[in-house]
Amino acid sequence: MRKAVLTVVLAAGAALSLVVSPALAGGSPDAGKQVFATSCGGCHSIGKGDLVGPDLKEAASRRDQAWLETFIADPGKVFAAKDAYATALLEKFKGVQMPNLGLTATQVGDVVAYLESLSAAPPPATTETTPVETTPTETTVIAPAPAEGTTAAGKNLFTGATQLENGGPPCLSCHTIAGLGRLGGGTLGPDLTRAYTKYGGAAGIAGVLQTLPFPTMTPVFKGKQLTADEQANLAAFLRVAATAKRSGNAVWQLLALGGAGVALLVALALLLWPRRTLSVRKPLLRTRRGT
Image 1 (cartoon, helix red, strand yellow):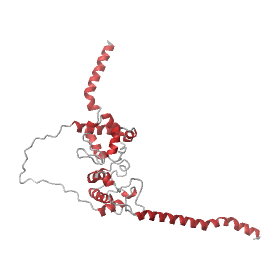
Image 2 (tube, rainbow, N blue to C red; image 1 turned 60 degrees about the vertical axis):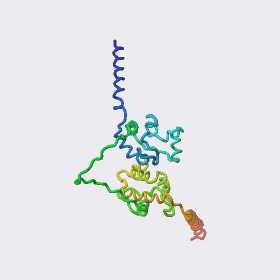
Image 3 (spheres, rainbow, N blue to C red; image 1 turned 90 degrees about the vertical axis):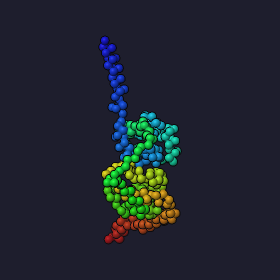
Image 4 (tube, one colour; image 1 turned 60 degrees about the horizontal axis):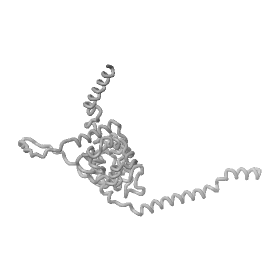
């Protein structure tokens, strides 16, 4: 009797879990939408075409849940395993590999749930609708389009000649770009000379500058997001920089500076090396002369 009761209870529990598990165990599409906007939207679109990475509107119909969860949580692991689909993506997007975003397991589940909700959504209706006429007293408020950025203003923001409004560091502190001085900038981050093309042109670079989705940049710019004008100006500068070339003279100038430094060190060595024994020789000479 006990075994029979236990069997009935377990069966009922299993049946109940099948009914409620999608709501309880699955991620939250709404939360996933927010995570996508802050961490993924700089490189991916939903239904607007490929950017730095693929359009993810139908991602859940192309890959199963387990694959999506593994890839979003640790893309490097999937690439290292030579997964055929991941390798094909790498080739399609010219070697641009998705970084590890450092998402928690809950956030990963939420993003997957969001992508699954998009793939499960019905197609938009194609029936014609009757336009609604507005009365003469009604007014439609149209948000002004963001001003087109200028190259000069973007360069000043990049180099730090103009400080970022919300206190973020200048790009030059971590990145280099063609045509900026003798040294070109920092090397902590990648060279951004071709960033405009690499990230898919106007739409892609706009998404990147809006969200700054890279793990190394997220903590640096937390609470210090770029303003709309700063984004436009930096995009304009990066667009021009994509066609710039490094001056051949810059290499020779760096070599000349290095040679001058070496020559200076050699001259100092020749000057100071003979004097290294003076502190010993002088007392010995005084002793010998009886002074």
